[in-house]
Image 1 (cartoon, rainbow over the protein chains, first blue to last red):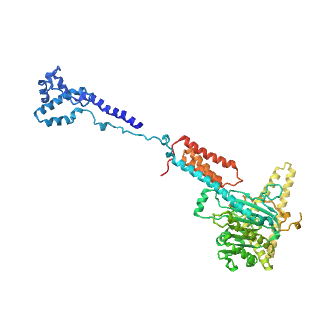
Image 2 (spheres, rainbow over the protein chains, first blue to last red):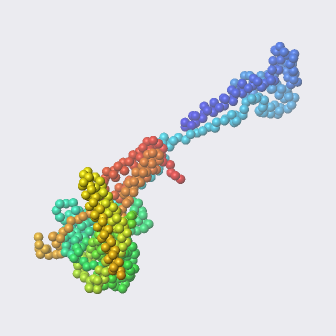
Image 3 (cartoon, rainbow over the protein chains, first blue to last red):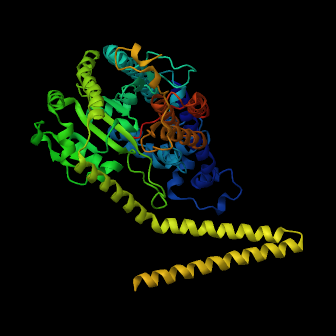
Length: 488
Length: 106
């Protein structure tokens, strides 16, 4: 509406402009008008009176038939009349139609000096759009509404996912609680309380990771169970899982005392998992250098593979009960890893090899997949109970499993070989480290000598240092002589 | 408490307390998502504030939400809240300076 109100005065202004301009021009252009004033003029006798205007002084001004072109045009009226007179003269002689033509015709001289209206409109009319935020409509904010809706959807998903994970964890714990309490004196510990009392509940590390520490049993130090659920609380993760489904996992890590396990390294699991672990795990890559063997040889399903240090170990571990357990629940088993040299995945250090062998611990590791491929329900947690039975059985079995003499010798040789390789690889580095240490010591000593104020003591310390260096050189020379003698 | 009183395999004298595994030993096992999202959220909110870009500020809000959802319970809530507040302030400031609605890129 506002734009219409703006238009009207603008139009009026624009139309008025050429009109007023035309008025000023006419004064200079109408040379013919001067002829009107021939009679009144003092210089009439010198003026050239054209033929057109000759008839004028004779004729009376005919009745004005002035076409009302512009009501404000006073000066032009005379010119209009004059021209009309001319036109009228002709008109009387001709037919009536010419009269009509004359009147309907637009006399070009009438508007002398006046520009065409369309040309004078130099500035086109710009209609500005009202800024969107001043409009009284929420529709223009649709992007913001979309964003807020997205955020609300994220929050809703967070709450729903968190609750689902929590329900799954509680269901798992309820189904396994009895078995655990009958086997362990301490079920549930977060490490913060003063007394070693069972908390009887899971430790929540995350919205999708739950821990449980069990301890106080024969044959083992303790057992850490980690329920690693998928991130149901993160909407991005939920969308990613629609492309690539992932399972919930239960990871069990049993740490053993030194007397609880003999020296061997063994793993069984899906082919993919075995290939990955052989590359990633420090102990598997060092001790189990052969490619994973198919489990079919030992009565296991085809999809499972075995990594072992030596054949005897496999025979010892894969007794009939274990095979029975694994075969029945093969779909839920991701990997089973027994090792006396377990130190975790290979540590990638930036500055070359680590100087020390990583610390090892006798460990049994189990990774189980929860059935359902992400769409698990609390009922599915009961199906994992037999697997926990297998874990307990394994702990007892490993305690009883002992290699025979041959196996033991082989195992010891393997371990010595690995250590030697490691020492060789780090030899250069250890040398450099020793060299730097020696230089540091010398420098420290020199500084001490220099800082001594008493010149006597200074001299004495210097002499002592010199003597020590001398002794070292002599020792080295002796060694070289001995080596030469031995070589000969 | 002697072991003979227990009928099962439990042994009270063998109880060992829980020690949370140190994360320095296994940096690769830790999930880096919450830290990355936190950093990203802060960068986007600073961009949104300085360059007056509305979409930057909105993305910052999303990043801080994602970081919160993936965070560990041991993490400091103050850090979470500060990044959250920063992203909200970025959105509010962008709209105060320029109340025009956001235009889609298409």
